Image (tube, rainbow, N blue to C red; front, side):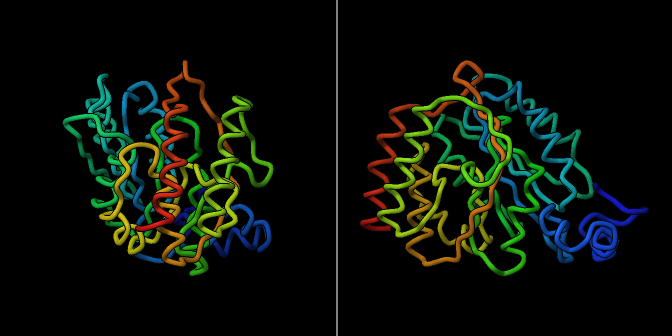
Length: 273
């Protein structure tokens, strides 16, 4: 449902019509609410060897009916990702969707690409979006809702809450994720269910204050930013999301070495910022 008789999505008129049709409770569950005038969502997409997935994921992100900028950071891909980024940005730009493109001349890792993207973000709210097809951009509206309602400063999208569809894959990855999340919680005194999730959402002032302090260049970004959010005693929410994981043959990049790095980061960033 994207419009009612020509109403602009997420406008006051659109929300009123939706509530008349569906009721308040259904609208809340579906993430139907008014987005204030002047709002823009910054979507930071780290890219490394994703030329096959980029047209699909960027089309899905661009189709979300929220004013947004998509910040693509190519981390020195060895395939045609950089060219595909440029082609898709030119094809998908619209009044609702603008693009920023950045490139690393040497491969530095996901964390480094995110730092580059965060520092370029100009929106009111900033979200991380992987360039693969594991996470669903249609869930942006419910992820940003606690921030727009001034209930949260940071939102984590949890793969382990609720009853959304989940692809069944690696049992040991699941156990490793639960172990790292539990250990992180023990140090941060948070009760997260999915510290390693891609979908992390921040008020712009929060991530702009934290971004210059980030040090981890690879997947250590996840426990590092979690510890730094916890240290600042920010309001944190979790929202249930769906998950369509991919196999290593399909391009999954995180490995067991990153798990050991995460262990070190949990302790390191609990000790000092």
